[in-house]
Length: 582
Ligand code: DON
Image (tube, rainbow, N blue to C red; front, side, top):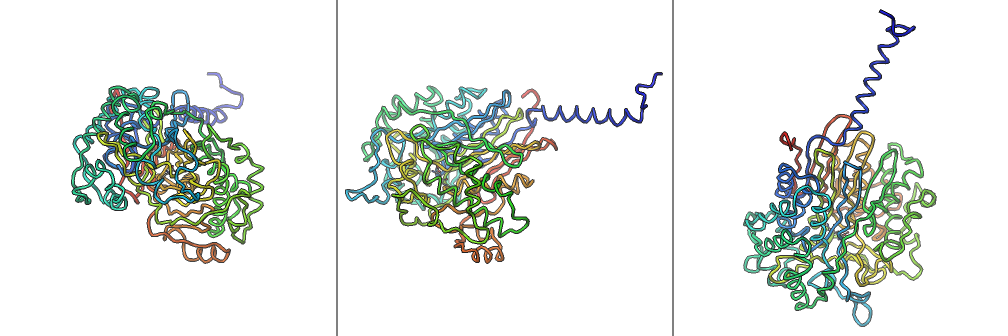
């Protein structure tokens, strides 16, 4: 036998194994999907709906339809047909990532003074309770869009679990009761909402079953006729009649003209990771990008000093939320300087302005010359059991991160008679007056003023984190805190945390105004608190937990798929192997 190389076998053997290792690695990186399905949502019955549709041969997009419909039924305080949201999609076949923007739109009769009295003062409650607070829902359009453009199953098949839950009823849990208690006055105001969710005007018992036959019928219309089943015809008629009879301003044209938009997500790069997140009208992706850029601009230099790390993050948060207030709004109507906000130069300038030893008072960061910040909103209104997030990945690697909402718990509390559809109060996400804080204490100016057919600025931030080894799908509810929670989730993932650790991790937040660090009581240890106070920060510990994060991580290097649901909530997560042939 001829020796294969003048250098002999000793040379060839290790090189051959290197060759095979490389082949194996190439095979791995070509592998488009995890071979298993994963779902994480804020309610076990919604997770089961997703599981059912995946097991029936649906893909992640069909599962998203099923989970969305089910959440709207069993977690009516969080989301529903009468609301909207953002669906971040990744299709593995062609590596196509897109954001389906199903954000609500202001009705055509809306205007900047809608919630102000003759003196220009904002009338309390008007943008929160009742039909005047409701914008035109995007959710029914999203369900049809996902099913027809991305799903494998019919809309009817994917809506079936939700319809069943609406017909058969779901057991009331403690979170439902807590939120319904909080919104009792608004729920009382409308006969239909009270009839569906209350018992003799009072809260139902825990465990009692709530069936929603009207909602089941509306979902059926959607299943049979697609979006026309909601935005036109009999349901549209009832929605508009109900809204107008109770003082709202919707018209049939508003419904017929609702526009769902596919948008390019914001794509960020940080320490070798690719981060894909929500683009305007969400402020999430841009703000996360600004904060990551500020961190990267200084080489992150905090070493192992926890107080310094928190200080730096807080200063980055403060600056990103200042810019959120000034520049962000509906991209179809406002020129948002996204490239400038996300430029390295700008981040370096902001970073250079951060004093490593002192908090920058928010009052020292200029706002628009005319802007007078209003009074601070009470933080107590920023609960997390409103709005909801789910994450799903199928065996082929298709994935969805979706954050969906009615805004407040049970939205506006108003349900147009005979529809079963609880309407959102997303109009409160606009700036009702320049500098006036909304329910989450967020301020805004002309970029987020109320105008006909505009989308209110959002904080919802469904996100993908992609590194060489791992793909993560995550998001959370939590009003203005969503963005900083997702930021902390991203940083945890990049530090190597697994899905459980990511959803469990303690959270803190700063949003420019109020000028204070809000934190879960266990998030900052006493020494760090002292250090932060010494730097001039105002500390605001919060008794209620932050968020309800749902995360999936596919570790490609170790061929492992994980899903986790935040222990702060009642959700559930599953990973399972498809039956052969599915
Ligand atoms: O779009 C937004 O930013 C808000 N409407 C989300 C509200 C929310 O997350 C409430 N949850 N705690």
